[in-house]
Structures are given as structure tokens and as C-alpha cells.
Length: 428
Image (tube, rainbow, N blue to C red; front, side, top):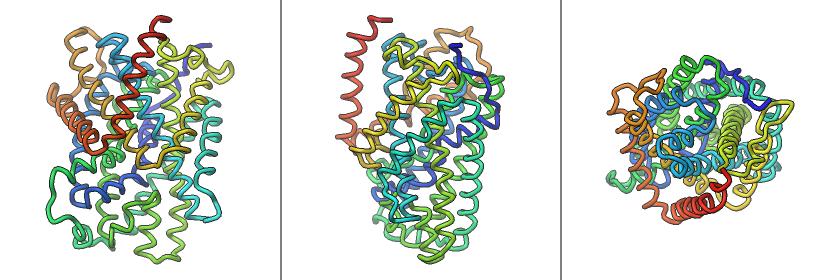
């Protein structure tokens, strides 16, 4: 059997979508405070929230119209041909291959918070071994696991919000900020605001495994983005007002440390939250593993990567080689790059892919007006245009404030495009 199984329902898809992202509520976003302050970062977050809401409502049209595991790669390939598809595929791979290493770092950090004898990096590496194994067993099993982990992690964030709410003070949130909010502060915080939502687009990569996709995908996308907007804004604003937010701005475990600030260093709630906090990180790590493997699988199936990466396990019908090779990339990232830089690169890949996808939507509306579109982007062309403009602004901001990482990203894109043109395209 060479086809992926269609087993995912609406609740499971919501769980995968939220699970892909929810680790962004647990860590990573707080680095934005270090470069923007709480007020500047609030503006960064609101700008990025508008981008994601308009993007998801527009992207859903593409996902339901072209329900292939390649996601943005397939949309751009259909709109612009092989080269456009490859560039979109490269950006998507950077997005999803580099999100798991950052999450693995945080898993190791949370475990170290619970027990200082547990080393961070070996723990991070062990996560790959465990969850590649789980994903090889089958998508139905993986989706059910995602559902359990996502429900637990959402429940935990709600408990966290309830606990810290009485300690919130507006004066704490606005204290220790720069004298004025300027564009530099807002734009510098963009990649960390993106981390609140990045990877939700990974739902597109399980589209071939969704039952009744015309209804399931729109429901899953819309429910998930609404869930994430509420959680992201609540966690970020309330955490910034419980004390000196600067103490939380450069660590991979801000939430248990925030509880320690309000309940005391020896609080059992802090330890319990760190224990349960692993659920959210595990959910995201697991779901991103699903997504990167499907992207590698889709590119290899089209001949844009070595063909063996498109092989499915004869027993489980899962892309086992794509899972393993993507894991090796994660190993390399964990061993060589810090988590804030990994987050920035992942977010740069994401906004590049968002821009290409929105342009693909416009092109396909003209190029294929008769294409079956089970879901139509609302307020077209306003929503996709807003998403396109903000994604380009985010791309330029990251390029300006994180120049070296942007050179690595776009330099890699140029090298890979040349290799694709000279080698793999000839084999198609």
C-alpha cells in the first residue's frame, strides 16, 4: 500500500493544529521582551495576530482545494511551476525542521528545572528517538496521542492563567520599558511573536489523512486559531504583570519561573506546573514531527528530494525515512545552534512560506477559476492581501534585525535551488 491513511476527524485535527503550536505559549515568546520590552512586544504580538487570523482564513481555501501532504509546496507548484514549488518547499522545511529542535531544548530545560541532575541537551536528543518511534507506528495512533497531550496542555494553561490572574498589576507590565515605543522595538520582537502561532499551517501536511476534508479542515483551522489567540494573549499579558518581567526574558522555562515569582521558590505548584508543562511541549514536538516528515515525503514523492525519502513503511504506511532523516537534521541543530536563533530561523521560513502561499492564492484564483473550492476565503481579496503585506513586513524586519541568520536562510535557499535545478529536477 502506497497511500497515506484517511483517519483524522475534526477533534483530532484541532488537537494536531493546537498541538503544533502550543509550545509557543510555554516558551520562546518571552525572548521578545528582551528586545522589545513588554509594551513594544504587545504591539508585535497584535500585528502578528492579525497576520495569522487573516492568513488562516485564506490558507484554508488552499488546503481544502488542494489537499496534498506538501501544503504550500503543492500550492506554489500548481501556481508557479516546479521552481516556485521548490522555493516554497524549502521555506516550509526550514519552518518545520527547526521548530522541533527549539521545542526539544525547552523540554530539556523544563526537565532540568524539575531535577538539576537531568542534562538539557541529552534529554532534548532523546525526545527525537522516542517520538520518531511513536510516529512510525501510524497516523491514527499519533493523532490520538496528540489529542490527549493537547487537551492536557490547554487545561494546564487555563489553570496557569487562573493562578496568576490575581497577581497581575498594570504597573508591573509597563515598568522597565524603553521611554517610548518605536518601530525598532516592535519589529525586533516579531520573530518571537510569530512563535506564538508558527506551525499551525502544518495542518495542511496531514490533509491527505483527513476524513471529510471539506468540513473537517475549515472547522479544525478556525477552532484552533481562536483557541491559540485567546491563550497567547492571556499568557503573555498576565505573565508580564506579575513582577519584574526582565527576570523571565531570557530563559526556556518562563511559566514555572513565573509561578515561583508569585507563589515562592519552593512552591509545589511551580514543580507541578513544570511537570505538566511537559505535556504542551510534547504535544508540539510530536505534531511538528508529523508535519516535517510529511513535507519531506511530499517533496521526495515529486522528485525534489531523494526518492527513498518518499518510501512508506510497509506495515504502518508512515514515511519512516522522512522521519529519521528529519530527526538527524534536528540532532545537528541542537548540537550547534542556540534556541533563540533556531526560533528566528524557523519563523523566517514560516513568513516566507506565508507570503508565497498568499501570492499562490491570488494566482490560482485567476489561473484556475473552476477549481473546486470547498471553502472560500472570506473578505477576498482583503484578508489574503493583509496576510501577504504583514508577512512581507515580518520577513523584512527579521532580515534587518537578524541579518546573519537571514543570510544563512536565503543563502541556503539559493544553494538548494541551484542544486535542485542541476540535479534533482533532471530526475523528475
